[in-house]
Length: 104
Image (tube, rainbow, N blue to C red):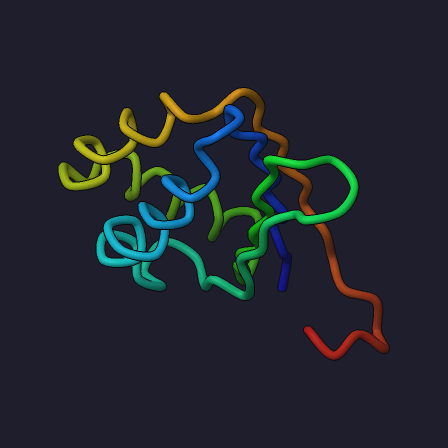
């Protein structure tokens, strides 16, 4: 199992728009078909205007295949530009759980 931790910094004043889009349209399109959503958070202390979400995949190959299918999904192609307009930066980290991690 691997986990992808994605951090998006959004334009000031657009955090609510991003959370709304993610909780409605994005979840309807993605479900857990393109990776399993483990968590979705936004910052209140520290760097602001950030959204952090974690996705689980069985392997890097699984992630690659699912992200390719997502990119080819017409519903995602219609939705993606709308959220990209809200973004300033994106960061992605791939993590493997330690043997004692509750997420294995």
